[in-house]
Image (tube, rainbow, N blue to C red; front, side):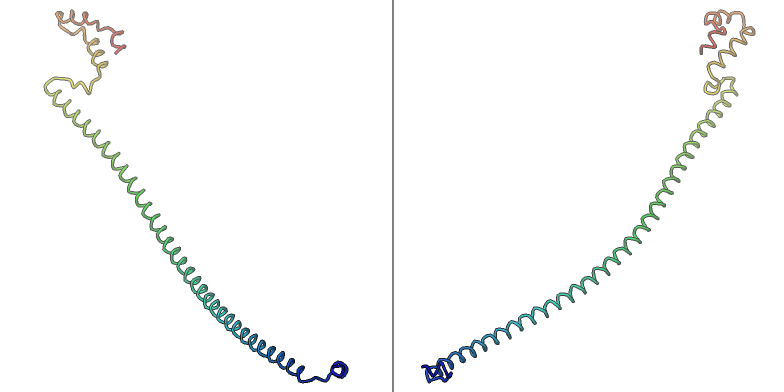
Length: 170
């Protein structure tokens, strides 16, 4: 045994021991190599899937950007169309408002024409149209023409006190 230690010569037991250790190392090395190959395969597969996913994300990003551009274009055209329609609606509203004002003026004019026609018809038979002559004007005319009334109607005039203060209060 001293020879073994001093000179490094091995006997058969040592040879078997080291052979077993070498085989064990080699088998562990083969297992480790196989594990490393499997790990490399898993990493390659993962990287390949990641590359495919990134390519899909990039493609989807392009599709989303293109869709957003199309939506923006549509909204712009819709916005300008809506502004045009609102402008047309405002113009229509203003025209209808003017038509209503003209219609009201025509109704008032027709009423005045009817009053004038009634006045002419009444004047032909010797009557005064009350809508044309105001009560104040009637009372003033009545007071001013009191002197030309027959004497038996003067009692009615004085009874109703057709004087200047009465006419002014009306």
